[in-house]
Length: 298
Image (cartoon, rainbow, N blue to C red; front, top):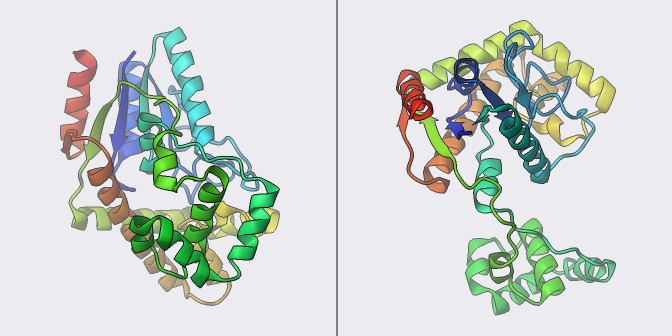
């Protein structure tokens, strides 16, 4: 069994390529996408239709209701299930999805956060009433971390305090020895590298297609059934439609805003892939298809 991952920014063609390769080389597909994991979010997630998925078993799609919470450990479990079944059935595994953090965590091991006691939580609540003093505490024990954050960054100050007050160690030291073993030990990475101008055009076209397919109606139904509270309601494609409902955007501005936010996401994904993964083949769709074929045939 061989395991590969297809990297690339959103709208680069990863999903279609993965299905084509899975059909040809007897593989399962593992989706590491934080939106495709939800049922009922079909258009906003740009997940392949049931017809497009025909003939390929997909892990990581249509698992949860939008009201249900998930974290990276769920993807660990999904991958483990896919790996065990692939070994039994003699299949390869193709990992695909824009959320590179999940793949990186599987390759390197996930840092395990300590359990925070009620006593520590109460102490942190008290400390956070004076952010300036809390920041001074961090600066006294962890100058390197203090330089990376703003003195009023409540979220990061709170996370630092949770680990420090629970373990007595600064987070950078604690996390060095608090990692699970890597879940993926052998994997080949391939990245679709689409010129920015072409990718922007693809994103604009995909956005228009989403709106034509009924994105506004999909979001209306999601809001009606689940409210705006779930985390998935803050995703690109959904949050902009909610702004449209609120009268903050016209319909023409809606398409522009979704496209612009998606382009910004694609830029972040490129940066993450370039900085967080070891060197790997990059190229256009044909180059990557050929490179993966060579890998499967070797």
